Image (cartoon, rainbow, N blue to C red; front, side, top):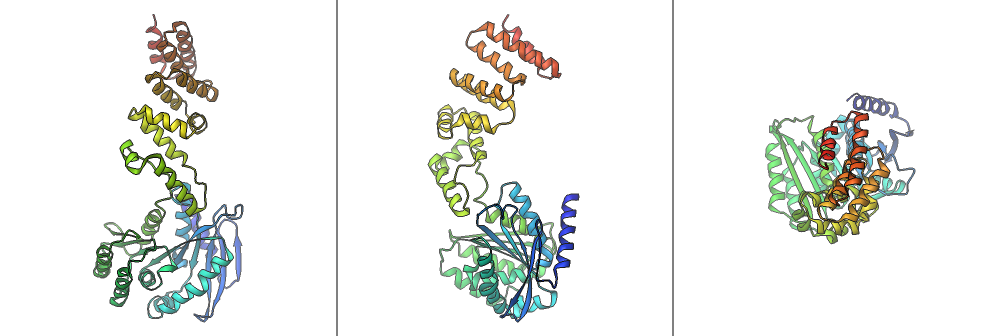
Amino acid sequence: MLKFILIHFALFIFTQITVGQEVISHKSLGNSIILHSEILQSDREIQLYLPDNYEASSNKYPVLYVLDGQRYFLNGITFQQNLTWQEITPEFIIVGIITDSQTRRTLFYDDSSLFIKFLETELIPKIHKDYRTLNQRIFFGWEMGAGLGVEILAEKPSLFTGFLLASPTHISSDRLEKLKIRLNTKSKKNQSIYASLGKVELWALQSMYELDSLFLQNKTEYISWKFSLLENENHYSTPLFTINEGLKSFFSDFGPLRFFSLNEFKDFGGLSALKKHYAKRGEKYQIDNEIHDDTKHYLFLQSVKENDFELFQELIKEFDGKTFIANYYNQAHWFTRFSTFYLSNESYTDAIEILELGLSKFPQASIIHNEMGNYFKTKGQVKEAKEWYNKAIRIAEMNHEKELFDYKINLDSLR
């Protein structure tokens, strides 16, 4: 929490000192640039945050455009860092558009066509020209800014592939009608829209229900619409919830897949579908198209849990499983778990090979020495089993391990 507060305080100070200056750089906090707009006949302050790995790579990145950057640019950075650390989203560029409280009321509604034109012909082309961007642009707006997002979705849907709308207001009948016409065209453009509203925001409930009904009545496989009516949020807290949940929704195909049953994996399409998913993911985000290591781990684990030795063997072959096990797992018990699985399926050569891999990585792990004893006991080699059980006992005594009693029972079982 302290780190979170310090980051926000530093970013707040940073945004205050950039006003009126053409470009100010800071490696960890980004840039603030001044962009002169012929359309708006004014200078616009634009905040810019580049991913940590931007300079060291040649990758292209999605872009999050944050209206009211003076309030929410910092939240974009915080959630980007948190979600990328968890591998829920890829890294992405963040563009904050600062708008003062007076002009925003005009630009986001009465003169919204001018502001949209500014985005379309000046700001977005400049970001695309000056930085390495993918054709994945996400719009975030709060209150009137979210209402503007509805208009953009209706009139200029190609501008953004994702919309994060917090506490939308000014969803006029004209905007709804234009959106209805657009939805009836059955466009095949993939878009993700996430909207939220606090239950206490009674003034906006009716228009949000109308907006929700439009999407529900015009469902299409190409448009993902999610609306959350929030019990414990209000007009000023919905932006935090919306940015976090909206980004997770937009990038729902990015994180490593996990299947909680083998039936779920088979229904998904098995290995062939899994390869296609990661190939598509790699192409979309311009990253490695290899199946994620976490996905491999969960599949191995689920195969063991459900005792599907045939699939387990198939996965071992497909993923170069023994090399994967040697490199991925950093706790000794995983080696004993897989060895036990091999042993229970009478695959003795594989069982001892896994244990030897574990010993090379954890030479002082009593649990692996004990499992070696179990292996030789199963093979009927009592002398060797005693030696390994005794080794496990010595290590456990030296380290005061609670498993010591179990190891002694295993040794006694040989007498």
